[in-house]
Length: 96
Image 1 (cartoon, one colour):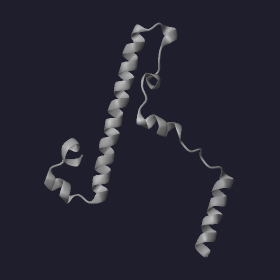
Image 2: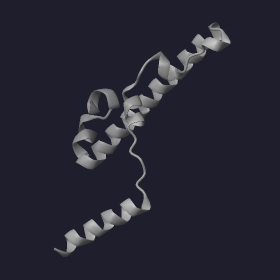
Image 3: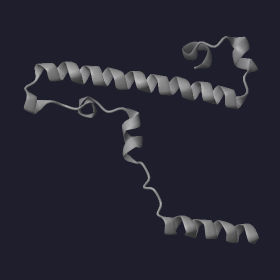
Image 4: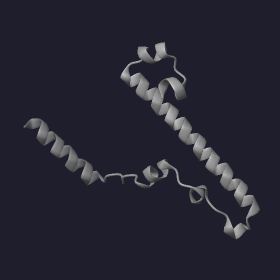
C-alpha cells in the first residue's frame, strides 16, 4: 500500500517509523473515505434532480459505506455518576 497507492518511494518507506507510517496510512484512508462520501453525495443530488420532490433519497439510501456502521455504533457519553464510579475503580486498582 505504501509504495503503490500512497506513492512513497522505497527509500522513504524504509526511513519511516511504525507510527509515522500508521499516521500516513490513516490519513490516506480518511482521504479515500471523504472521496467516497463526496461521490455518494453528488450521485444522490443528480438522482434527486430527476425525481419528484416527495421521492427524494438521502446519500445513505443510495449505497452504504463501511464508515456508516461506525457512525451508527457511537457510544453514549457516560453520566457524571458513571465517570465517578470509574474513577473510584481506577483509584482503588492503583492503590492495590
